[in-house]
Length: 293
Image (cartoon, rainbow, N blue to C red; front, side, top):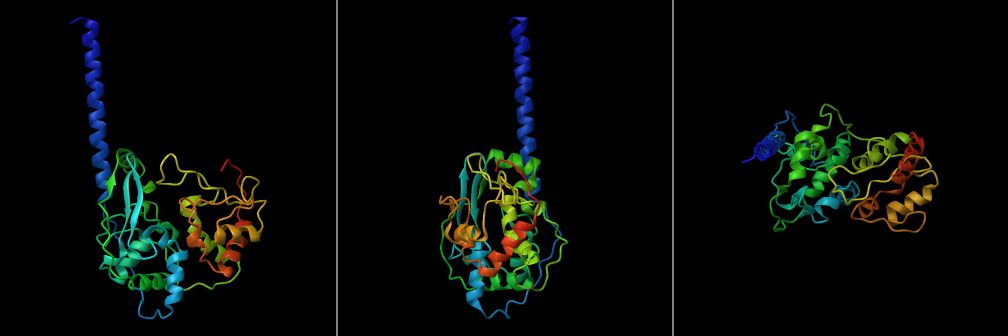
């Protein structure tokens, strides 16, 4: 074999070896991150005190639970992408969780054994009040069992890479400050403070500063979340009535429709007038950010 060919063969062999080692490392690190145990204890909320089941159902829908788990709680396929993987939301109707285990899942994105849940947007609810979380849990406990043949989640190569290099992108438990304390209750009023409380629902997709951008966990073909700050590239031209129309009817100010596959306005349509007006007050108070989203 000519010397050049021998060199090329050696180089090719080294490259293959590097790739194999990298793949093994990604699978090992991602597996370790998936199996990490967080030392967090769920709060045993007072579910028995919940009596208003209509309000409990409204909270289950408006806080986004139905968007992933369905109105009946039976779960479904959230994503089926060869790169990211097959992401399935849990069938809540067949769970045998205690209230503390439900709280651990909702607020902290953790399974009962303390391992992280995949794409569970608990950062939205980490400081939601005990009263609201108790209502949501009480409503979930009313579900009739539904047999839903959902295949097990399968994490694709890109999903594995993300979990290995940036675990918080698909495992929100890694980004949550689990030491935060939630209030027992909150005062529902049209105020910036209450609007910020409601605005937590938006931050999982639109970012902590609500300036929009690529949505964590979404595939490359998914549209970016829009800019919700009061800037020219955001909602400076919006009125409060426009926000109501967007959340209640899924209609932008220009008359175009919001895609519920990416903007879950059917869930947010259950926000009441006080919540939407408070959210509007909060959005008007935050820093304006100019970007292309």
